[in-house]
Image (cartoon, rainbow, N blue to C red; front, side):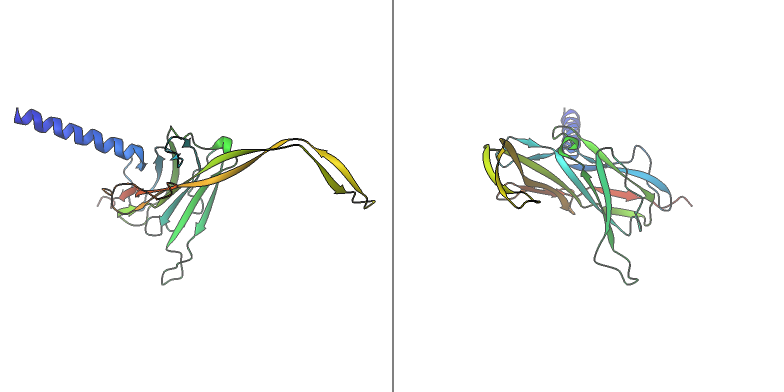
Length: 221
C-alpha cells in the first residue's frame, strides 16, 4: 500500500510539472541534445496568450522577444526562425563586455497585423538556430506582448477642409467609422528560478514568471 501511495504521488507530481511547463514558456529540442560547438535548433514554446484585466477575455500574442546571452550564441544575426506573418529583428544589447561586444542579443518576432496574432488558447513555437558557445544551463528571458483591442464608433460628420489648389474652404461628408485602440498586456518569463510562482501585477496587465532554460552539453571526448 505504501508503495502504491508513493507511486501515485510521483505520478501526480509528474503530471503537475508537465502541466505547469506547458502553461508558460519552455524549450523543445525535438529530441536533439544541444551540444557546445554544434549547430542545432532550439524551439521556444509559448503555452498561452494573455488574459485581460477582466479575468475572462483571452488575448493573442502579437510579439515575442527572447534575450540570447552571448555565452549561448555570440552573433545570432541569422539565428531567428522565419515565421509566416511575423517580422524577426535582432537587437544587440547596449551593455558590452571587456572586448566591446554585446553581452546579449534580443530576437523579436512581431506580427505584421493582428490577424497573425498567436491564438491565445493554443501554443506556438519560435525557433533559434546556432552553434552553441558555452556548455551549461542558460536562461532565456522571454517577453510576450499581447494587444487588447477596443473598437470605438465614430459618428458620421461634416468636416471643413481646404482645397490645396484654390485654398478655398469647403464642407465634406465624412462617413461613420470605427476607431481601434490597443491596450498592451505582457507576460514576462524572466525570473531565474524554475520553481517561482507566476505573479500578476496590481493592474492585472502584466504577469511575471520563470524564464525558460536550455542546457548545452560538452562535446564527447
